Image (cartoon, helix red, strand yellow):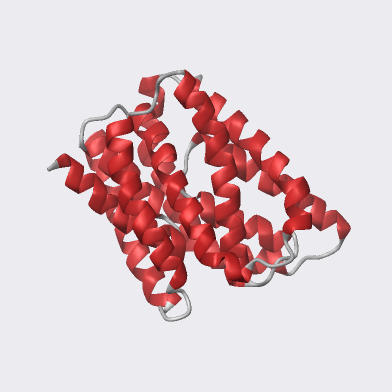
Length: 248
């Protein structure tokens, strides 16, 4: 039963990540619900989500032509950010992290709600200095992503807007590329420290892998507005449940 629950959470989370964002909060909550300690659940969630990021990139590949030059300098920046975030998680006391989880989910939900506004504000700026600020924002976002996946996609889209990107589907593809690189960096640390539950992670991974590719391919036919509304509703419910468990 737990395996099916995790697979189902992967299906929902992978679809949300590919189309709108916010899916990592769903899969993280499902892993905690099965009894995993929060830090192990977070590390396992990063491990499981990475396969979905990869399949999502494949789904968006037709929209990402001509971006190889930027990736040459962005990829190392993203990898280092993911390493630092993963290291910070491993240095966090388990009880402290458990107490912080509802608040991290709340921040992720608020970022999801404010995502379009963040992107619009970032897109108003231009010039070399702002592009440097965009690179710094991308680095800090990947540090955050290595530590906690919730809200990572929204922050990444805002950083890309600040860097001058405007094509939404290409930005979604880049977002998933950066998520892959950042997550792989963190996973290397988590695996060495034995913080990944591979059985639960593989169940989530299977669901994410199926839904991420399919959702990315269907972006031309699905209403982004409706997907975002549904994703926000799920994020709010997960966040409310986390506060209930922590404080009720």
